[in-house]
Length: 123
Image (cartoon, rainbow, N blue to C red):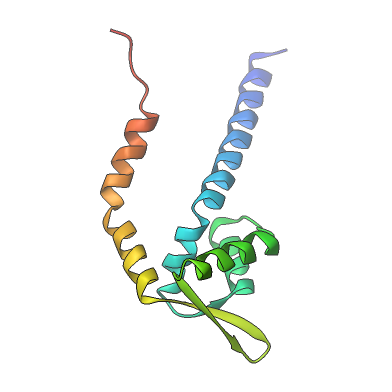
């Protein structure tokens, strides 16, 4: 095995690891992503799937999206209404306050993640 093979193999592994981490982050924060996107207006479940795919290059299942939308609706963060043949969702007042609180905590979240991932050097 040549040094070039090892380097290229390492890059492939790094790329695969980063792709999996990217997918995990998007899926774990999908509720926040949906709430933030709903600030731009009402959207359907299909719109959510398209938005996630177009913005983050990740195809999520309809089951994942609709389960999350129902959960957000049960928690009164969003409200769904029928518009012709599809259900569209919009933020409730509670949802608006929630997403504003999260977005205002942006610096605190960044600092937390940085501290969490920071490698401690040996003394």
